[in-house]
Length: 126
Length: 107
Image 1: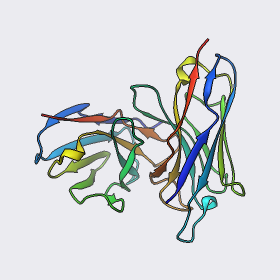
Image 2: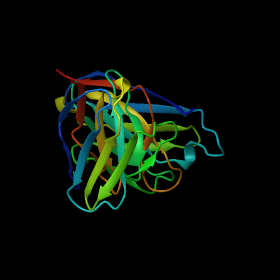
Image 3: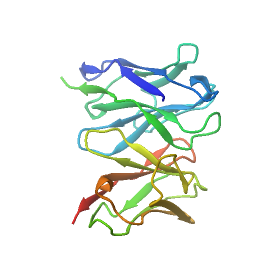
């Protein structure tokens, strides 16, 4: 079973930066971390799900939500089985639980998120 | 960007009821729609992807269908463990987008 463990969250002042990391393990059935698109999804307290950013298996295709475009950068290191989210110019509205998620289908475009981490809480406040 | 309009925002139902949740895409997304179930304090669980493909282990009382840009999640006979919030998500193109969610409550 795939396990995703996020880290790097915390309390930060508006305008500052944070870098989130996600360590992946437990891949089997002939596929590895390097075969899957990965994403960040966030959920503000008491609110719905918001997709933040996604990156294809080979980092060739990257996308961002309009709300974070130009401020956040997603990246991955397949050798380290890790996903990252660099968050700059943080705003109070970025306060949320940030979860690392894995696509259900290898190599192809996104189809759905079948593995979710427990998340790391980011609180932006002065 | 593709907007996903989910309805209703909440529904009250009894065990054994048939429940239908709808998601409308603001433009064509082919069959690239997924459905998730989220219970309080837990991470969402993928139920269906590609409009109608059930993820392994998901009970067959869950089903998905499509008519143009309208997508439907149906629970044929609601069980006690199905009371939760359900979200749709378009997986056609970046930026990916979720619907606003539907809370299924006990009547």
